[in-house]
Length: 106
Image (tube, helix red, strand yellow):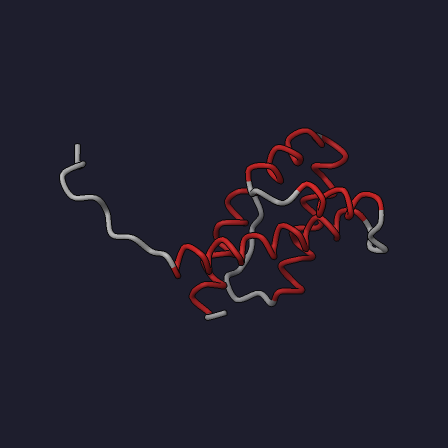
């Protein structure tokens, strides 16, 4: 993954989860930040967290695995799912980038 894509992912996650993150963080550092935010959401508003996971289109079986079978703490498991899914989304968008449709400007 390019540095540019990584910066886009960090920016998007930082905005979505209200995290203050530098765009030069490593994957592990970003996962730790996401995990801390996930932990707060689990304690304060788990429904919002589940809504966020759904909006990210994280597969239900991966969520269920993280809850029931992952050897990692739940916030860390969810943080890894979020990080990996966001990376997939950015890569896919870059791969299938489309030009705006002409004539639809308002």
